[in-house]
Image (cartoon, rainbow, N blue to C red; front, side):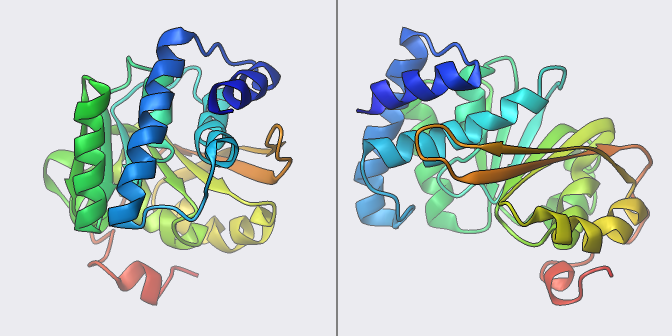
Length: 237
């Protein structure tokens, strides 16, 4: 069922999922199923749901990433979504999976080894810490987030990591227009510019999604991001 769902959905989405990619997604699924017993990573059950709502959902990002270059930082990656499915299909992108929950980082680190992925790693930290200075501030070519927080909060967490010319891709549900309206001030303040909003429907299980691509057009001002917890506690409005 996993391979059939990936093949059917992949064709509908215009994706070329060859045998090697299918093998990696099968290994991913088996490792996720086993790890879920220990780490409580996802509420989804069964090959069809995971194939569509995790794997193909993550791969929907590829339609906006044809010209993007890494490194890719996936903020709040959890069980590796969307970063690891993107990496499977775009092995040229170096990848950092970031999460503040240690057990999830342990799972993702073990999964990277299991899949034999080169140029990928997982880090236990907060995006606010990485974006405040040092080797990660304004270095990423692309930052992704999947249903982590409201967009005005994500803008402060993610845009400081993106270099000028790079992009921040936020994955949202069908009600993204209101979030985007509330986030306009934060996006502008933090050096971003809205480039593209694309609605889509997942194959097989037809749920609505919205992809929001924000281009980094100016440096993020000093003082942002604020210390961990502040962007969510007092969002820019």
